[in-house]
Length: 270
Length: 285
View 1 (cartoon, each protein chain N blue to C red):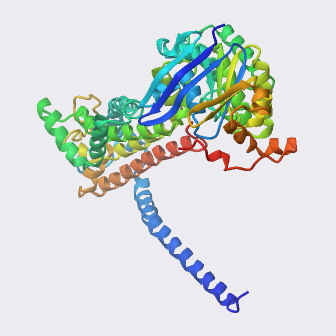
View 2: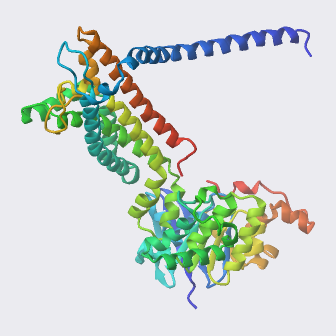
View 3: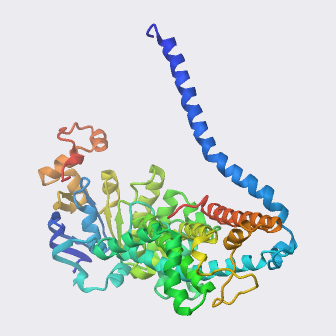
């Protein structure tokens, strides 16, 4: 079966600086794929090539191919591609308008005018994003008044409202407290049945909890991809093993004193 | 504790007092002129305020009574016309600089020219408009005056728009684009909307400023002792009226000058107050 998204021998340069090197990776229908790796390893860059958000950065050059359902993303109109491949960002980005208008924004821009239809879309999207019960009585309140975690679920609802097939999540919980994080993770698991999800995260436990497969990136390369349990239990590449060993929580939980090597967070940084 | 700790504490206290005193004095130096301008203007001007002051045209020279109604209307006309030209032009140029011309030779040149325009003495702009508008038209006019005022307002609007748009977090743009919305619609429906309170504040401050400009009106709008709201005719304006009446030998007219000055201060203060009230409690993005 054709993968939903696939990158093949993908190289990406910011000017003269290489950010991705020979990346080959596929994303399969209805899976949650987590991309992990230290800061600056290129995981967000890779994510942003899937919906062509890197186009906007001056001086970006791409070699190799990125395909959405077998078609090169560079042959698809960016607006059409992004409707099908939605994205949620690290920091919540509520628009300066009401909760209702935030969710209705996408459908409105894509030509939905009918009030009843819009109400339906907003309710369905907010329910799917597990936010409906918290906001149903204050849909006309400004979105900025919500808490950070609620704002992030609002952003997910807003993305769902344009009915994408894929949702790209770029460290969606790194600006949130543990309670809000747990809610988003629950939500990811619920959405996994209906959407294909690519999750970039710094949080290894999160990757382990919510993903079906995991890709480990280092210095612009994909080092290892595999089913989550396998990669976490029996990494094939020594670099993956070292990176995972640097995870204090896991070490404590498994009662194993992993080899304490170089501070992992700094690999891969230029 | 070292043996001389007590002495050190005392010395620090002296230092603290001295610095606090200096800061208070500096604050006083700033406040005194403002307070005295307000005090003198209110004391001399308030007596001139009556119904006739706001509704009538100036009385014949030497006669008492009359008012500055035509100057109030003239200022409103001039500011409105200037705003009508400067707001759209400035907004569009600001959007261009912020959204499409971040880098490159042309945008950089535009910024330099814009900043230069902001620094041109307003009387020079007045002369320019005299040569460019008044002379070809053959006579002074409100139109010429508002062109001069627009030239003062435009660079402010351009600058404020660009700055406010740049303060909108890039993530907000990305979030709009990521929904598959074309860039121009993201700019008009999200970015401008997020920056709007700031831009409006900047425009309000600019308007307050041009309402008080005198020099560029001297040989453009020129002044007019009668009601005149035709943009193609000379009109009066509050600052012009202050200028004329203040130098006249008649006590009655001098008092009218104080009254008009007070009115100008009130207008400018209202502009500032509106801007502040509108900005407080809001933030961009």
